[in-house]
Image (cartoon, rainbow, N blue to C red; front, side, top):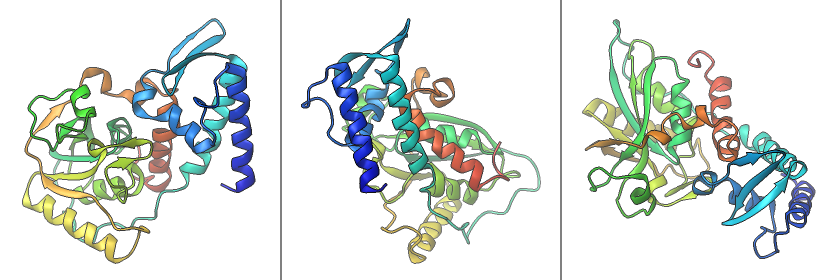
Length: 282
């Protein structure tokens, strides 16, 4: 975004603070800060009561009553941010090392982590050949973790998604190409967008030697080609266990399409999938 454009957004944010009565200490001074405040995963879970022309919103822990006009301003700000963000995915080539498509229908499993599992699940639910995509936790030592404990960053688990796919329709390498190109940024260490912590790290959890070989070869290929401006930090580790997340986390993006976090962070990923992989989009 240009400097003048950021300034315009900052002015709009200032107007918002004046309208709802937020002090300068609670209102971010830049659009980036404003956006991150209302789009963090934890904050997004709190944004939600709407009744009779007014909306109760939680901004950085501060509850304020926002008029319809101000709600519209927020939507405008988010829409502009999405427009800027939606075209930012890198052009990622297909893997040179991959499994061949199976001649008959079957079921195989893949698991990845790359930030909040809401968006990762949403992307792969729209991929042809993926029979199911389940949000959960993997990579840590704690047995039967829950969302609250994982969110502390002390369990070792990452928010993850396990997919069951038909290898006659989509290959493991194609799933990884989607993972690297539209599902997340593999160069961000222990974070994705507004979410920070080891629970948001980038990981490929392999189930067998073939998956490990494909994943490691693909990362080496992309790093050698300098597809991304920084080196890929994605871990490639065996899947020891996968724990299904709580029911309210399943299909979250599909069930809450108007949630600001989904609008800003995850809907663009699905749109990029549709644009960059039309043959695999459903």
